[in-house]
Image 1 (cartoon, rainbow, N blue to C red):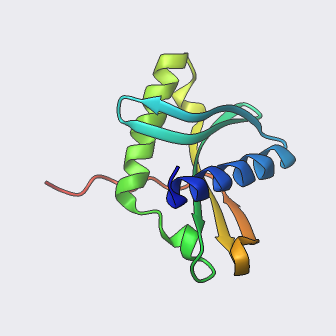
Image 2 (cartoon, rainbow, N blue to C red):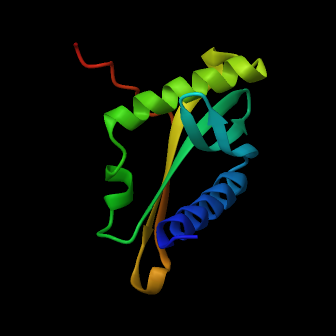
Image 3 (cartoon, helix red, strand yellow):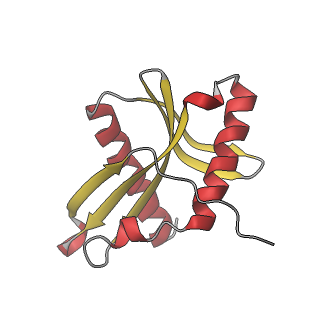
Length: 125
């Protein structure tokens, strides 16, 4: 396992713990769809949250800032594919982000859960 993969797995464990502590139930980890992979899928009441996890060892806020419009659009496609495959209501789906900033010696410095991210429109062709 590479260092990047270890950091990703660590971030997903931290994120899952944070979500469960907030009352969400983890439905799937590393869920594969034809368009890609979703880090975590969680039930939040009647909603289903498709969660991207970003962990960074850089300056504070770097993890949250690393999610771009292209990735958000791909996540939405994955979420819709997951809903269709599992018979879930796509109207109850949302995209969330758990951002994890690491400080000295890899210790967790800050964790933030962003709910219901806006999905940008496709750029004009």
